[in-house]
Length: 297
Image 1: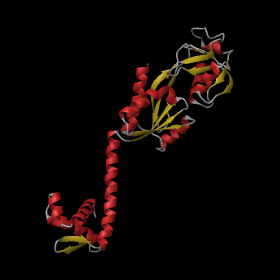
Image 2: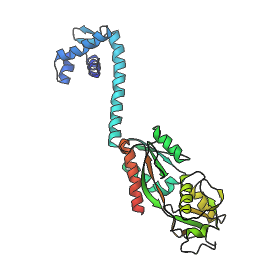
Image 3: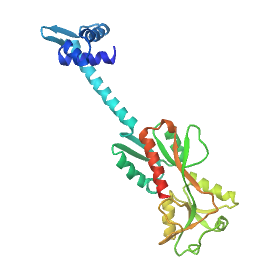
Image 4: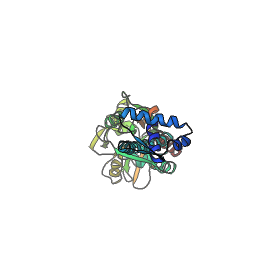
C-alpha cells in the first residue's frame, strides 16, 4: 500500500470513474485499476462496486476513503509547512535570553526581523544561567541562546558577536564621576554592587581583575545589569558593569559611566547546538542581531 495508491483511490471514489481519473492523471485506466486492486489485496475486502455509470465505494471503501482523505490532507499540510520552514518564511524561533538581553541587544533586530519575516513567531525565554541555556539547546527545546561566552562546552557551538568594555557606574555627584577613566587598581578600595551571583559575567569580571592582581570588594548582589545601573543612578552604590548598547560612556544625566580600559572586555554572542542544523528562520534571526550590532557599532 503506497501513498499514490491511496491518492488514486480517493480520487476514484470522489470522481466515480476509473477512466476520468486516468485522464486527469495522464495514465491508462488499467494503471488506475492496479492501484485499487493493490489496496483490495492488502485489505482483503472489495473497495469499489461497479455500476452501469461508473463505480462507487463499498461500505469498506467508504471507511478507507474517509481515513485516507484525512491522512492525505494532513500530510499535504505538513509538506506545505515544511516548505515554509525550509525557505525561512514561516515557523518559529526559540531564543534564550537574560533579563536585559532583548532591551539592550535585540530591540532593533526584533523590529527588523518582524518586518522581513512577519509569519515567523519569535519566542523568548528567560534562562537563569548559561548551564540552563546549554541544557535547553542540547535537548532541542531552544534554537538560540544569547550568552556571555566562556570555556568550550561539549555539544555546543559558541560564536562571538560583540565585546563589551567595562565601566564603573556611579551617581553624578559621586567623587569618581568626573574621572575620564579609572585603572583597575583604583577599585581596590571601592565597595561594589555585585553582578548576578554565579553568572558568567561576574566570573569574567573577577577573572579580568585577578589578571591585574586586583580583588574586588562587594556589596549584596543584584539580579541583572539594569538593576545595578539603577541603584548606581540612585546613589545606593557603585557597580562595575559592561557598557551595554544604548548607554553613553562616560555618561550624562544622573548616571555617570567611567571607563575601565585596563580590564579585558566581556565577550557576548550566540550559542547553538549546531550552526549547520539551525532552521533558516533561526539562522536569519541570529544574523539580523549580528547585523544590528554592526550598525550600532
